[in-house]
Image (cartoon, rainbow, N blue to C red; front, side):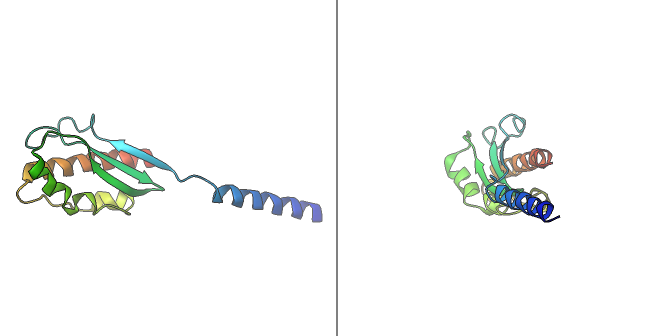
Length: 125
């Protein structure tokens, strides 16, 4: 009986140690292909969403043809930061607002983020 308890405890310790050293589950969603029909003012506005342990770690704009001065307004807005730390499901429920003065660009980025979140939800399962 003692031997069985010792073995079970050893197995439990090994499992805890393995879990502690486990790498976080991380993946990246890129909307270059899936969002190719989404147009800003001057072209496509793909984004890349990084998800780690089920939470949004990073949302970044990928190279695009938007006018830099207008797109800078989008990048400085809460569009790229509002979702950080949220679960994919929480992020999908958040309403992102377009940026005044860069409406076409910001609406396209928001649509790409929504496309990326749908892809992330599928990958997270």
